[in-house]
Image (tube, rainbow, N blue to C red; front, side, top):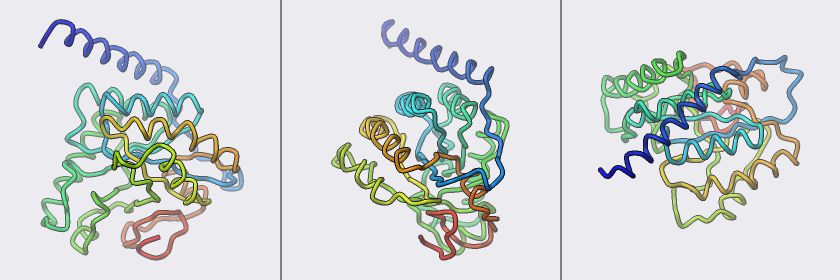
Length: 248
């Protein structure tokens, strides 16, 4: 590794450490308000982080627009460096939730293997931010009865924009999100490495939804605002808070 490359990485880490420390000193963990205080709400969520590439750019956009989101993280992506990014998100008021350890197809796994994946990530998140995830998004949204029985958390899906596909441009991502927006809805995007088109799309998605009267809330707030008491045994994969069938 060359000196210049090493210096750049150290500088990037130092910046994230500084931002995490700054956000920690001004911890913005959100307090749940009375349900009557909420109007139209929507939850912006991101999969496949944390990382030191795209996740910080997403956080910059959230801060710029004064909103929060929820991050469904992969345990194997949590390193010393990316944990600082995750701490920054948490201290900004964002939720940190579980998206498995290694993003496998869990329908091919035993209950014990599934539980190990979940516990690994929940332990890593708790070690970094001091709080365990309360929600789970299954990889590929692939589920079966073994997964439902093994995971004692509510399952979250959401309305996506296929933003894992580089062929889907910024404008199409924006259009897909806005076309599916609904009160109590969950938006599913990705903060994986290099996903700069989604970062750019946020500058159009967020103002447009604000203009429509939406407040951006965390997953935790979303269900609280809608007065939905979630039963982890319900076998619903939520794309909106008031959903009563398995798929929304």
